[in-house]
Image (cartoon, rainbow, N blue to C red; front, side, top):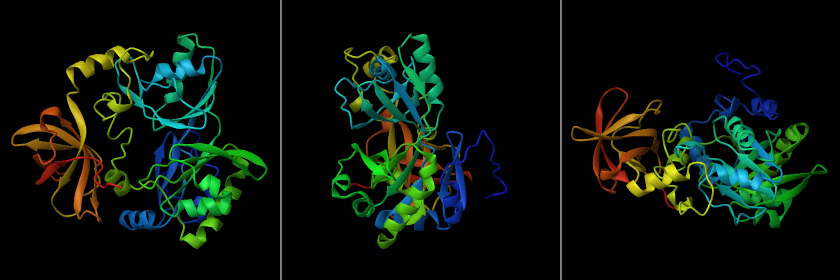
Length: 372
């Protein structure tokens, strides 16, 4: 445990904490007021290659659930998002931008429809629970909004399918992307989904009994050893190459779903009730002023992007890079960037200003950087 990170009630640990320590965690981040194990002795690049060639076990308990239950649950969930959920199916996961009245993004959770009147929002890093509670009370919705003690454990990488097949059988291993099912685990009924914050999109087990966390970790770990499993966490290089956007990095409340490229999942024709509908209709009519794009840029491996890096063409600032890394696969620096709409064409030449004040040449790219 790092002397620089003091744990307290406001920075929670997960029920996998002791196993994470035993497997040699060397770095944490804080996410949803909880520690997120990030590194286990490997460099970001070494972990990237291992993740893309083998399989890893991740403690992602930081993916907290906002549970909405009751007669008005479906109506409240629809009010949160411009994504049309009228045909949402039980047993499916849905990526949904959650917005405020101005169309600003407050979170981008994965929605799990557990039943007609029961939903989980598997949230990114913001206090969405409080917002949903406020809307429920203010709108007079007949619902309960709570945070259940659910602690997801992720199995990610191309060999995740083999690990899941060894644990739970071929039927579970053949789950389609963004589908979930129930498994029997130590005599309890748990959810496993085909999902995850990596390009491989492995599996996530939504454990709702913290007393089973260490036995579950051990079970998965033992099953993963024939396939080269190591402990890991979400990988920056993999995320950027895959064009996976991070709330708090690529987007905040100052941004809207259309800027983030999520217009394809938004229904703005007035057929659904969403708190930000009118604002998003106006933005759509005018066109978003900036859009998320990739930037590939020159130079030696870049440092971490702790604050946005300006992107220029000539003397004009046209955007900023919000996440960046050296891609060992592409042999180039790559970044995720919000770019003014007049400069979105792939191949547009730009200059990137690095933290030391130097500039390097770059080019606008389509996302994802790595296809397939």
